[in-house]
Image (cartoon, rainbow, N blue to C red; front, side):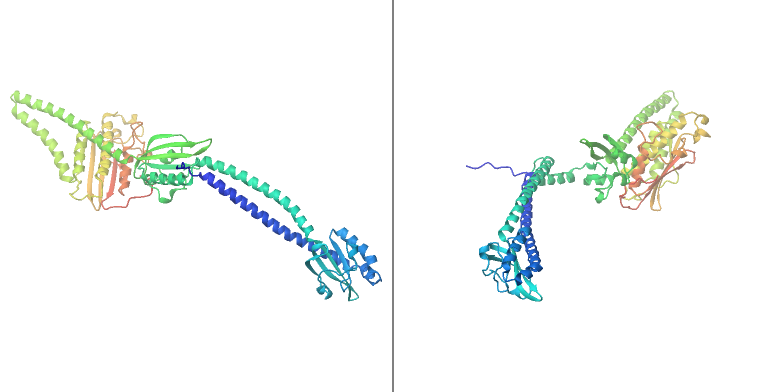
Length: 560
């Protein structure tokens, strides 16, 4: 019959057993040491006590005088007994140099030979020894009695070993009580500590904790979302590989304060917030991330759990989808216009005006072909050429003319493969969209510049047709993308804020385009600046190196 397999003892139980054994061993060791040292100390104290008594008797003038009498015992016996009782020792024996006792606690032993060694005392020394005499084993001291430089007698004072042992046993009883109390106190303290440990470890044993740690590490490294845990002092307690990559942090980031990491201020504020944050969009120097935070509370603020999702590619795809949607709307509108023009041509032919119909159709074709030829001839990069043609169609639908500057030249193969086409679309597409918005609103807005304090651009001066001028030039080892418009421009006080997420003149929910432009430019090692265009509107200039640059690791936002 197989016995059921029992679950291993929990870690708290194992530690409790170990600590109990350890406390018991420590208390037993201390008790043994105290007993040994107490025994030695008791013997030393007894030796000092009998030595003092023997020397006091040997130095007494009355003792020397009694030795000179014919019957020393008559005087010395009462004296020795009095000294013995006063000092609490076992015996005080005064004897002649030839070891004949003059005193003894047992009067029947007076006159007998002293049992013990006296040779060293006869040489003038005072010594101690443990010897078994008539009273049993005793610790004794023997010293000479001098009278005028001559040894006239000897004194031996002693205390029995049994009495010393009884004193040690009395001390041992008190020591045992103290040791028992220490053991009980240690056991209670150990139990309390391990009960708390059991709660924190949920009763798991060492193997279970080790397995959980392995799973924990594997999960942290395997999950693609960023995971960040902050303690109550807003320091990084834990961060996985994805979290470090998304925030651009070095490997030694654990233990550092969030406020010391030089993250963008809005992102730092979200991580330090005490309230919960759900699906907030934030920009770092290189990425668009979605941030979720949840405080960990249990009677007090214990920290925050943060999850991070990379939204960069999704945001880029959304931008491309918006562009495609715009292209589709432009094509739909152009199809409608083409139908109208075709009806006009047909009507002219039906009216017998064939020459006017040919001229009308030819003029429309030439106007569209001029822009296509200009773009294709100057920009050999197909992605940028397609983007410019599509944006030109969109701008035309809004009454804005998109013009390619005469000095625009991008030869075939001028752009390296390391320069992502998606970033080029993000940069140029967002700049053109903002420029078309500004030029269109300026053309349809109020003509009285005085009604808009601080307004710049054509509305404040001479009227100019709504136009966006694009310059695309690859030369001298860099790619220059410049977009100027005929809009109202940007007030000087707002120039430092236009590249920050959330800045927009179109209300809430906007203001991400220029932040994405700055991010894409910075990711490729370039710069983007804002100035005043030739027509008074805003002019954005992005410069990108055509040689590969290392990916920046510093998460600090560059100054626009």
